[in-house]
Image 1 (cartoon, rainbow, N blue to C red):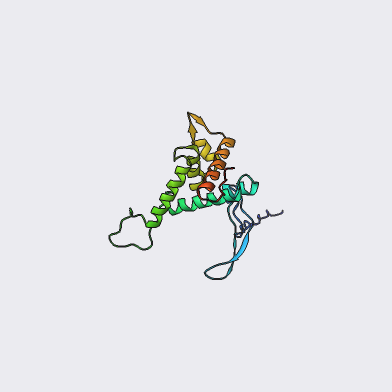
Image 2 (image 1 turned 90 degrees about the vertical axis):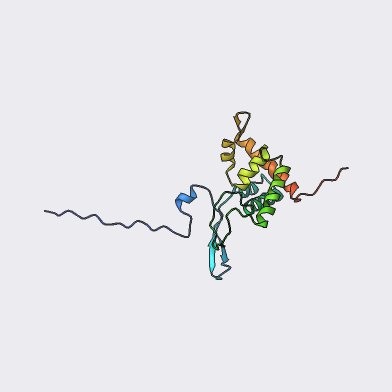
Length: 184
């Protein structure tokens, strides 16, 4: 009589930590890895950048480099203005300080964001709303189009992308990245 064979224990394959996980890859692509030296330690590190909406549009030729730069400026101002709603705790706490204090840098950034939104027609305009959600809060164009609507109708995908392109063109003009045309 032959005895039963025991099943071999197989160890699950180890995940390669130098690459994004399968879960992360399903949520958007990454650029090729870039090798650089860590600024603090000098050791070589490998960075992978998540591809964003503006980066994809620039790579596809949908927007110009000036429009991409205008979007990056707006996004940087938006983050500096602390309008994204991400709450952080202070590492250094001062006695008697409150969380309601806004720094001068934040005030200047908020003023510049408000000026940019005014150039787009205001916060409630299609271009202003698109800039706020897609560029500032980094929603996808599709997410913004599904949640935004005028006169009881949703915005269709190609129209939403057109609104974003128009908003980026206006921002490039507002930030002085495009040369002014002279009247003939």
